[in-house]
Every structure is written in C-alpha cells, then in structure tokens.
Image (cartoon, rainbow, N blue to C red; front, side, top):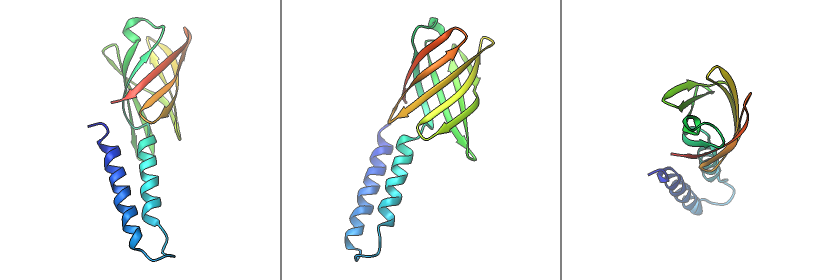
Length: 138
C-alpha cells in the first residue's frame, strides 16, 4: 500500500505522456512537465510518518516515530518516543533537508536529517554527544 502513491503518479505520468503523442509539434508538453514535477515533489517530500532508530542511546530513546506535516507553508514535526509525544521547534525544511530541535528530559536535542526516497539519515546532537539516526517512511 505504501507504494500505491508512486504507482498512481507513475501511471498518471505515463497516460499524460501518451496523450501528448497526438499533439501537434509546437504545442509544448505542459502536462508531462507538471506531472514530472509533481511526482518529484511528492516522492522527495519529507511529509509523512517515519519510523526511526538512533544508535548508542539508552534503549527507551533508541526508536520512535517522526510525523512531519505541512500547514499553510509551515512544517511541523511531532516526535513520538518513550510513550511521549514531543512537539519540535525551530523546524526548517529545505529541499531534502529537515532540521529541528526537541527537548528530551530538559535537554535540547538538535536534529539534522536528509531525506532520499523513502529513507532518512542524519544526526541528533545533544549535550551527551552526537548520535546517528536512520529512518524509513511508513
């Protein structure tokens, strides 16, 4: 089911491209450019639910869920970890990079991630050190 979106957009792109075969030269290819850009935007988007793991941290913080949403051009991040839901601050998304801060046990943790396809990789930096974070889109 998680690949349904990719399949849908790929079939939409294919059908749109096929319809262009009947168009006379000089009329452009608005449809294929728009669909291609839309597929790229959706496929590379950090928006969604991500299951993640962190190495070399106490067990209760070693896995969790990130929920990244966008409302009115503003990104929001919720972090579900250790039976808590934390709201991130200082959320910044630039292309395939996501940065935010979250407070865990009173300490600030700065998270820097890079999204590629359905995978994210990055680091969580705190006063305790820097920790590798990996995740996969649900």
